[in-house]
Structures are given as C-alpha cells and as structure tokens.
Length: 490
Image (cartoon, rainbow, N blue to C red; front, side, top):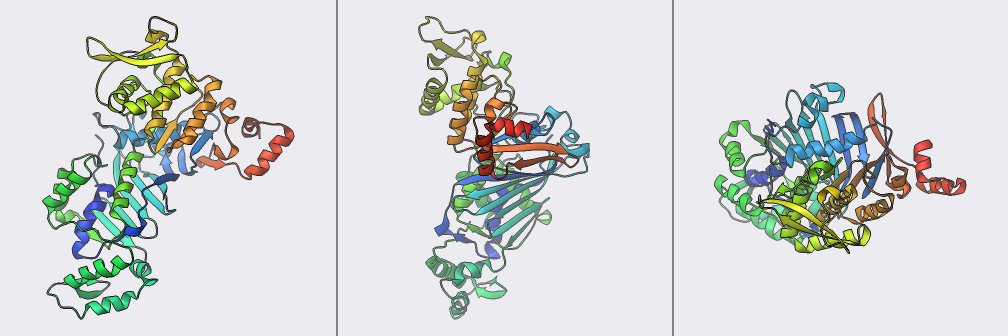
C-alpha cells in the first residue's frame, strides 16, 4: 500500500491558520490577489535516470534525445505522480508499472531519497516552490514537503512536524513604506484591554492588537483571515469550502483533523505565517493538487480502446487511453458546449467528413459511433483509423486544460499533415505541454526556443536548451538546414 504517513502541506496551510491564531497575526495581502499560475521548471533528484536535473519549461516543450537518454523517464515522472495522488483505484501501488519501488530510484539504491520540485510563477511574477521528498525503501512514502511562497513564507513538513518561517522583517517591510509601523504599535499600548498576546517579542493586548490589524494594516490594503477556535469547526469549514480537494495523505478531512489534534504530542509547529490573500492560497492549493493530475498520453492500446466499455463517471484518462471513449462520453453528458467544441476542432483541422455520437448497448456499455459523410452505416470500431483515437485524446487534453499535458512520442499514429495542427493547439492552450519525439517531422515544425535536448552521461540524464537561438536561426538559413538537421547532427 502507498504509505503517505505525513500530512500534506496543502492541508496544513489551512490548519496553520487555526494554530497560529493565539501566536501571531495572519497578514494577508488583500490588494495583491493573483490566481493565475504557470509551471516554470521541474527539479529532479534520484528519480530513474535523473540523478540531479533541472528542466526549464515554456508553454510548449519538445523533448528530443537518443534512445535511453531519459525522454520516457520524464513522462514516467508524471505517470508516477498521477498514480500517487491522482487516481482512486485500489490497490494504491504507484510503483506497480515498474514492478518495484527500487526500480524508480537512481542506481536502484533504495536508500536514496527521491526529490521532485516544482517552480511556479503567478500572474504577478511571484515565484513559488513546492517540493516533495519520497522514501522508496520497500514502499513509497511521502516523507517531506516544502512550500515557499515568494519572499514571504516557507512551510516545511517533516514527518508530523510543521515548521513555518517568514522572511526577516516581512511585517515591517509590508508596512514600512506607507506608515510608521513602530508608532502604530506603540499607540496601541495606551488602549485598554483584558487579554494579551505576544507580538514581535512584545506583550500586546489582544483586543487592541486585533483592532490594529483590521484598521492600521487595512489602510495598507491588507486583510486577515481567522478561523474560529475549535477542532470540529475547523473540519467543517474545510469540508464546506474546499470539498473537492483530495489530500496527498489519501484520507478524509475528518480523519486527518482527528489524528492531528488528538495526538498532540506528535505534532509540533514553530514560527508565524505571512501569506498572500486567502483566495490566493486556496487557488494555489487547487493548482498544486491539479498538478498531480496531468494528462499523460503514452502508447495507445488500440485493441482495447476500440472495444465498448461500461459507462461510468470518470474524467481521468488512463496512460494507454484505454478509457478514452468513456471519458469522451462523460464530456458529452456533462459539458455539451465543450463536447461541441471538440467536434468542431476535430472536423476543422483533422477529419472534416465525419460525425461522432455514442450508443449504449443492452449490457450497459458505451461505444463510439463514427459516421462518414455519404455513407449510410456507421464505421465499425475495428475499422476506425488509429490516428482518430490519438487526435481525440489530444483534443480532450487541450480542452480540459490540466496544468500539465505530457505526450510520449507525439508523432506515433499521426499523419505528418496533422502534426502542425496539433502543435498549434498545444501552443494555444493554457497548459504546460511536454512532448517527446524522435521525428524530424515534429522538430521542423517548432521553433528552436521550444526544443529541449536530453542527454545521458555518467551523472545521469541532463536537460539543455539551445543557446543563442537567433544566431542559430540565421546560420540555419544561411546553410539552408532545418531544425532537425541542427538537433540531430550538430
């Protein structure tokens, strides 16, 4: 079983609000709400062929390299994370496709921790880092998580202990340019009150302090969010406000809240918390959780995907696309507008003379019905081209816009005339798209700035991008060479 013994920072960020209410203030940057996020780079250590590698990302990333260089291992990273956090099927054995957890570790050394880090940028240009550390000794265990939000806060969970720290002088920094922070605090001491809190090393009356936060910092455009005291209330608030969140620890909110607060001796917190607005925080949590549900399209199992499948609710595309028809059927039922957009794109760029529909069999299975213009009867699934299924899987990914779309060997089953249209759709979607290829037909349709070269040496697989792109383009024009010529034969 997947042993996620420790609790997720994504959940603990909400819990920290309650824990720190009697220790410090939550200064929330209310005027700086920014809910758009984009993945900028991935840091890998000790995962498969990546001993220590960093992949810088753009919107579209075409990964190319020799056989056994590590291209498919990059796709396997997203497959592994999805199996850890994004799938509900039992048993939860994320290493199962690789037979053993040791087969996922650099050098097959189970004593090495596997580290995966994501560098994310929000729409205001702030940098966010979210890192995971897995133990692979016999099983897969999430041992450590780290979340760094801009220049404000760093949250680290190791086991059952959460440490929260802020940049030095962050509160003064936020307030210093617009009013005298010290004089505002000193003026509070003259007010009357019955309870005291310790703030910045000074004992301050709680009621006055709350007024200071609301009135003084409020003038700066900041606001605060405080949950009421009470463990049961905390769980209810979380359940009501973020119902769709799934924990990395793979357990319900009630169980986590109960375990965390009942076993108080095993849970420790230090520090104070300064974060952007609560809406920003929840948007970030949602983005991070979606990050572990990438669309990963590997080699399609055409013999299975053509068969009728039992209709059930699912929007999660399997790695080999075996459930493609059912996911499409769910889109058809739940989001007719998006389904019609998919059909429009299919007919506009790829197959102009076909129409799609679905038919339920007497046994409760659903099958894709494809009719070609001018033909009376639908085309039997056994006679449908493999490229149709590949295009449908890609269109599904583009329209659902997950944070990450990862495609292994894009060119497989696609006519070269389709590849340009697929690349354009990937560029235009909101997802970060990572595509591996061996094909000159793909490389000659992309810009040099979109190419990522992966090479394997004694220190494992490494990523690199082409330097001096403009100069290389001029040289290619001069010698009348293509992008693929430069990448494959330089």
